[in-house]
Image (cartoon, rainbow, N blue to C red; front, side, top):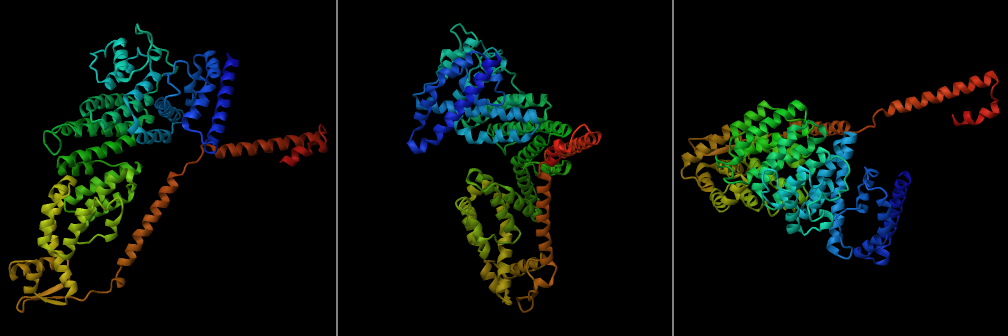
Length: 589
């Protein structure tokens, strides 16, 4: 047995060497992908002969999932079929991520789990029931309950309480994906030969469930996905494994997304998302008690999203006040939390805090085209909040490639607010009302009417040292001088402008602006920037990783060297060894 195992290992290494050589010559010889696979298939016979010596050959390669392609019993493919070649390679890529999950469990390191989760985003467009079925066949035998359950979800068949017989599952698979009997087993429903010889880890099972969630969500099977996700999060809560934290957080995300798509949708008070709050609060309580920071951060964000979707701002504010968001959460979760927190503060008229949270959210959000949706949403709210604060966003913001098209209605809105055109502002809001409601900014934009007037007053105060109230009426489109005087007085009281009103003569006189560099404002601005840089430095130091007990190993080696030196010196003194014989040892020290 040892000789056969050694032969398989040697053969597999030789195969990898040959494949690397072929890959290096593809560009030189102009070989196509099919020709490359044909050459690899020509050597398959001798590897299969070696594999037959040990049917559990996978146990040799516990960390090398590429050996899966030489299994006896692997789903058959035609090397001359380009689709089968692509499907096989894609299937091997999917199964290779299971090695990352095993490494995460063995080394208790969440980085491998996060790497496997990132892989899902790259393959989600190619996930099909056929691929998922092949993955399940590699992991489970056809008699296992989990195999039947997953297959029933993929085949969309209601196979009864016990998910039906094996023959029913086999028949449904043959009908849906045309799988051959060589892998499914004999016609009498016997269990096929499954190459996986180890127990399936809970992490791998949850990872497969997440892939099924992604497939159901992308194919808009929201009803099936909601039921499947409910059972999944219930199974996850039964485990208390820190290696499941990142996977559980992702499962809860899709659990909430599925229920959001069920009718009636938010903000209806009959929406199914309201019924989720009890389960999410229970999950948050369990995560806090178990110190599951990933699930705690994810569920906290989902609860804020839930409250905001149904306009329960008071409950959202109480939730923020009564809970603590984990400071060590991932950057994406922090960005989402700050985004929802900024929306809550904006609705509560706390525009300064809202601007701070939304600015941080846009800085932490990815700006690539792959995930530009969140960046666009956060920027839209940031623009509206800046307008409510009386500021005008930078024009360069609207020229960014990922924002130019999405911010076009907001650009027109900013133009009207900038010049204080009240009539043009009302016209723009009326034309883009549907767009603003869809973005969730309409409620805040309605408040901008007073800001348009204030902006107009501020522009007039900066342009004229003295201007009559009648001219203000004409510029702002106000009906009477009394209304204009009231608007100017309110702007002075709110600190929008620094001016005085002469009621008898009917004019407004602006005060000369002071030197801002004579105040503490520049020093405070530099202080905030330096504070942010130091915070980044501290975060980098905390994020550094060092090998465990490496310093002890160095001390141990140094101590052993000193002991050898003392032993040699003692032997020389005792005359048991000559200095010439010990010279080589001393030179090495």
